[in-house]
Amino acid sequence: MIQSFYETMIEGERYVLILQGLGVTILIAVCAIIIGTVLGCILALMKISDSKLLRVIGTLYTTVLRGLPLATQLMIFYFIVFAPLHLPKLLVAILAYGLNSGAYCTEIFRAGIQGVDRGQTEAGRSLGLSKKQTLFKIILPQAAKAVLPTYTSEFIVLIKETSVASFIAVMDMTKAGDMIRNSTYNAWIPLLTCAVIYLILTLGLTKVFGGFEKRMAKSER
Amino acid sequence: MKDEILIKVSHLQKAFNGGRNVLSDISIDIRRGEKIVIIGPSGCGKSTFLRCINRLEEPTGGTITFEGVDVTDSNVNMDLQRQKMGMVFQHFNLFPHLTIMQNLTLAPVTLKLKTEEEAKKIGFELLKKVGLEDKMDKYPSTLSGGQKQRIAIVRSLAMNPDVMLFDEPTSALDPEMVGEVLNVMKDLAKQGMTMLVVTHEMGFAREVADRILFIHGGVIEEQGTPDEIFNHPQSERLRQFLKAIL
Ligand SMILES: Nc1ncnc2c1ncn2[C@@H]1O[C@H](COP(=O)(O)OP(=O)(O)OP(=O)(O)O)[C@@H](O)[C@H]1O
Ligand SMILES: [Mg+2]
Image (cartoon, rainbow over all chains, first blue to last red; front, side, top):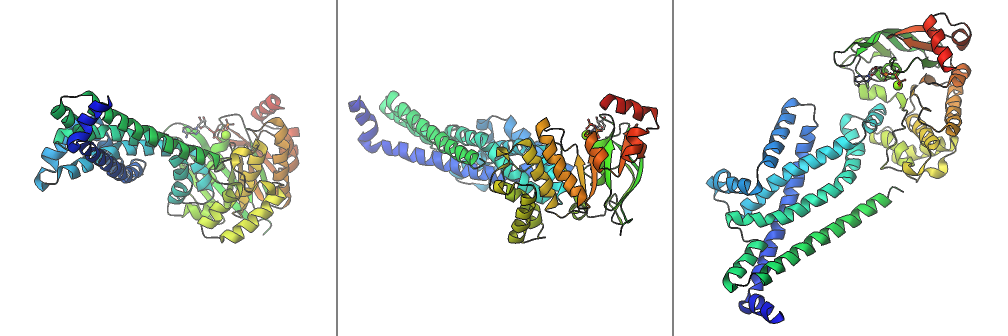
């Protein structure tokens, strides 16, 4: 076992591939969640705004981006939308994942905002606070707390979905594992290594965010 | 000052999205310092009436003048008007993410009416009046219903309003907590606050009200002093209503 691990992973410094792939996976996921969060905030505010136009734009965006398979979207972005710009593959992947994650974040945030009891808005407004002040001082802090669990799972889904990036030949961790499998004819070691690393990432994140939630819940007692 | 009309409601009408009129024609002058209790069967529009006054609901007809300002005018800055109209809800609606003190200071500080320090000082004084000063750093979830409602009243008072609107402030409370909230409201009445109270607490109405309004069929079916309403009801509907609840 150790012998074969050594032969497939260490020899020829093939483990470096895995590490590079891991770096790409994390880079895409982190950048995408940042883009997605910013986009999600903006679009969620659009979707709850008084302007019909803004609401329609928001709905259109989330419907389309959540309605298509990620691999399809990724290729559309790479071969069609961003093709004229000749952007590096990795950048396209980051943008595509970010735009896609933005659609999911929008729905998560919108649901969070609309999930806050209407009485909260009424109490804020009845005190003379403006719509905006009520939103920022009363509604959003409560919504943020409420969405944390779903937001966490969105980030975890994102990490796992980076494996689809190989559709446009981005070398993420899954792709790296697959390349090692190809060159060593050993499927077990490289793919299980990837699996273990994914699990460590997702479980670790679940733990970190879970602790975060607990701390926030405690602060209200 | 004594007979100054604080709120003038003329021919107020309200229908929800094109449906039938919930309020069809309500007119009333409310003087400064007056205590008005509003009664009527469930669904007759008592809440809607209160909520039209601070425009949590948009009236579909008529006018409401508050301190000489037509608050049904769409050009009026309603946020500014609402600063002078406190409202207490059946379900308290305290801000769960803020401490009791932060609940009290949020509006005055955000609206830059007071510095944080001033607001805290006033908040503390108000909390002392309702005997809850030891709760100031607690969160609402740790309070009983009666305590929450007393805090909600104090939160409105922290804005130093000219009128207080109460929408069934004791209906969501366990019976043993009703008294503590009514006592706070009675104190407030004694201090001369103008109050509009929707309630089923007829004892409170008898004791505190200057005038009782009986709303039925979208209009003020009958109004009068507690003695007139309870001892000499004129309309058949009011008599039936009283028989059902007393
Ligand atoms: N947002 C709304 N949309 C549509 N109809 C509404 C709305 N709010 C209230 N109504 C209707 O208006 C009528 C009056 O409601 P309102 O809440 O003012 O009555 P109420 O006298 O306060 O009753 P209760 O004693 O049950 O509190 C009811 O028939 C109710 O169904
Ligand atoms: Mg009501």
